[in-house]
Image (tube, rainbow, N blue to C red; front, side, top):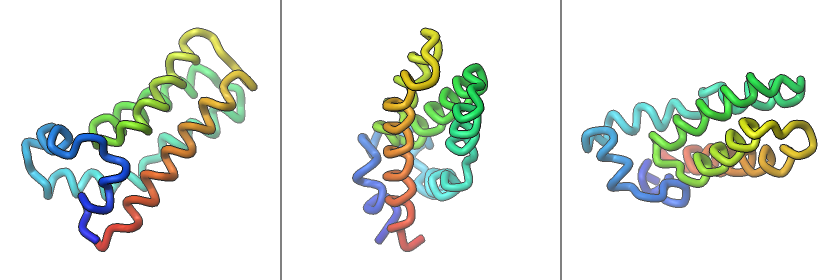
Length: 118
């Protein structure tokens, strides 16, 4: 399966996403295929487990930006909601559903990338 076909379930607007990469599919491919090595999700999980909410906010914000740039709209939205909650002072159990949503969307993106025959 080709990259954009594999990513169709997680990329909201393929045309807009490719515009961010000047229409260069090879450039987009390079960054999309590197996404599984991005450490922001695991760093977010570690920070949340340690109760380090400022660090959790930083990692969630960075993950949001990376996801948005790659067109992973649902992941970006979930991360944005987590960032908002963190900035409003939410901690601990109040963040559990938001963190679970980010985790689920992140897994969907990784699964989509794994389906690619790249």
